[in-house]
Image 1 (cartoon, rainbow, N blue to C red):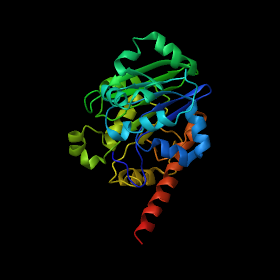
Image 2 (cartoon, helix red, strand yellow):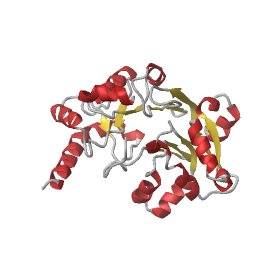
Image 3 (cartoon, rainbow, N blue to C red):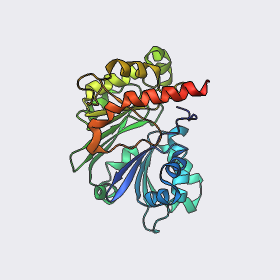
Length: 287
């Protein structure tokens, strides 16, 4: 989805006690970090970044790479592992040798075959399993499934049509983050663009049976909140079980959102209020 006034490019920061993982690096990620944390705190967080995983070659998932690598201040021996498509490798290589000293690049298909790389970069974070799964979008597009020694499991769809391989690999995840680019009435457009509708993403969530589902990557035609989701939340507000976050009660991503795994059950309950707030913001812009 193209960035808009209210939604930047994709970037999901996963914090660990000993480092951090970034899933996708849209062109606005570094700017968003500064706005959220302040410049000094953002630089401190960036110095702890261990791995950047890029799902595919489109700009809203890739263009922030150079800024992140350029601004990261860390010892010369402390490189970032970049996992991504072939396009990302060639683009970074064209940026010159100075930038190349800051990272080690591995294509998605190479990572799990290279145990030494996994042990050096990902095991220190407590990651026991990291898999990139080919999905139905553009050429060389992938989803990610990450498992941690503390028992949690994170699945991120990247951009894709509903994908059986991803569903199977994601089953039982603690947190599912899935793209829901279009409202369900635009299913033909979603098929042409190789994206998911909201109803398709929720169907994936039902099959995965994740503890919580976060929907993201909405088209810029929905600058605040997709109406389909807003109406569904109004209908379900106050329902028994509204604190659970599966397909029946998804959570909607927004820029600057922070998710604490220890508080996952709390998030679905605040979504109707968030919807109302964003609807009010939209109404005020037209008055």
